[in-house]
Image (cartoon, rainbow, N blue to C red; front, side, top):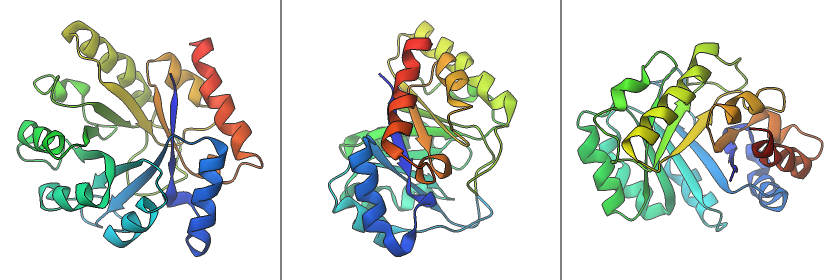
Length: 218
């Protein structure tokens, strides 16, 4: 089943509550919260106050920590109500330990890799995560074009998971739109993060229904 995570980085922050409610009514399964520190990625976004505010809406939160030293903040984001907490393979010193700690906090554990990071770097962590987030653009800004080689990694990682007998979800973030999503789904992703394309769509509900219907064509 395809699930949709609406990236609030693309929302109108002067009307964030209204935009979140619009995503709920449109059928989004998660709110995707990109927490950026300006160090690991060349941008700063938002932190705990915004995550706390959107958590109060009751929608499940998919918190993506695009930051250095994520271990410092995992407990707090779990306390704020995150359903999924995702850390980057590139910034986590002891990945297996961190992922298992996220699970101990009652959250789904996610690990993300940037476009230039081989999926094989996760081979010794298979079984320690519930979600593998493949960045299909270089992280830091919305509205970028997909890095073609990143899409190919979806099928590689899906094959790795199947051979290991691990039932983790593959999530993709970066320019997920109506003209790009089918290839992403065909390669094995089932959790799609979409921001600019969704929030700018004339009919967000129709947009989400179209994405969810792509599984039939996979």
